[in-house]
Each structure stands twice: as C-alpha cells, then as structure tokens.
Image: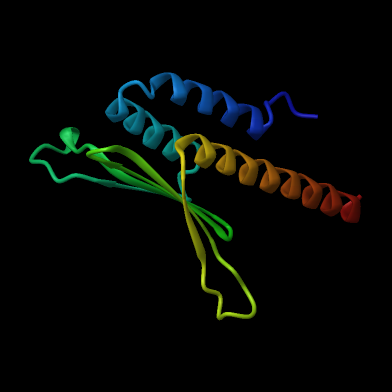
Length: 133
C-alpha cells in the first residue's frame, strides 16, 4: 500500500478548508481555483478577468472536466454559481444534462467522481500487474 492519503480524503479536507474560506466569496473562489489547478492541472481551466497586470487577473470561472463529468463554478455579483454537467451517451445523440447546484453539492459531487476514478484506476493497475507477474 502507499503512504499517500486517498484522493477522497484530500478532497474532503479541501472542501472543509474551502467552506471555511466561504465567508469571503472572492477569497473562496481564488483559493478554489488555485487548489483545483494544483490537483487537476490537465483537467482544469481557469478563466480570468482582464487586467493590465497579469498578477491582478482575478479568476472569474473554473471548469474541471473528468471523463463524462464537467464541473463549472463562476464568480458573479451574487456569489459563486456552480453547475454539474454530465455527458449522456447513446439515445439522444449524447446531449448532456446540466444542473445548477450549491457549492457544497458541487464539491461533494467532484469528490465522489475523483474517488470513483481513483478506485477504477487502482483496480485497473492491479489487474495489469496480475497479467505481467
């Protein structure tokens, strides 16, 4: 076994720390974007407001794509708006469904997908090891 904590544990900790920062929506959103970029650099896109100095470009929207799941959060005048989008395959031409959710629901769904992917990856790695040993 590895000494690394399970992804679900890491993201639960992230969710708790983000909720602690939620008192200030701007700080919360900046921290959320930074942590998602660090955790999922190839799956995360952060759109920033335009500013003269690059260091002053405040995050406006973050999108995380994990398989068939897309998680979007956007900072607006009324706070952070979150959307969970799921690609549907088969009948219907693959049209996605989209649902606006609370920040807490959004974080929980993201944690669940990451944990599910980690479990599947671990099972695939174990199956591959059994084939070569």
